[in-house]
Length: 286
Image (tube, rainbow, N blue to C red):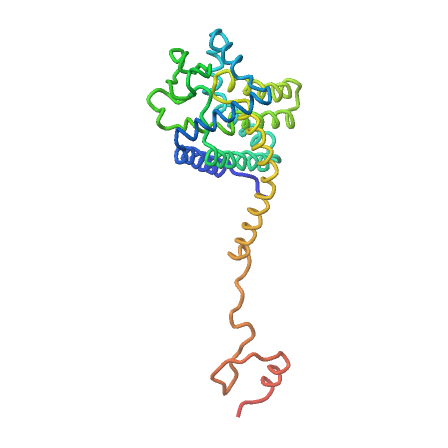
């Protein structure tokens, strides 16, 4: 298998990310169904006794020393840490890079399917009677974001605010954590591998951007992507092998005539055996 080239990898990741971002915008869903799905998730969590979003959100809202850093983390870390881990794998753990990249991409595309089938209103966009505060809007004076998710001011229309289920913030953080734990060589790296996905889960709930079940769904999507990625790689490898054979890379093209020769007195070439050809050659033409 050839070593991956950085420019090809960068182009591929750019194409997948552009498709993911464009797909999010195309599958916004209507507000009524998204709100209905969000309330259904909240009710289910209440029945299961796992609705931890409200106390976390109240804590982050009441304590700016927690809420403001959490907002910065939500708005930026997934854009910084995920590419950094990819680059680290590419440069330092190249033998594992291709499989890891395929896993991340497969899970990301599965997440897009989730946004399509289940547009979900995040807690911060529910009616205030449900007890949630949008901490990013509340503390927007501290950062570059406005009142519309983590998008920079004036660019809120370029994001799908109902793409809450699954939480790919949590999914990508889990992927990063697994990579750091599995391929890191120091205790600090492995500790970061554990802490990062846990911290991300707390942040997405405390800022009222996701429900706990969104985080669970993000982890489930990563699990499905892990199972799907090897199969996808095998399909890609078979397609490459087939293309290489078809193109005849490094091989002489086949002879079309394949043993058909024209002999004295013949106008149409015929397929002849070696013995017949030898007899004809030894017989003088009349």
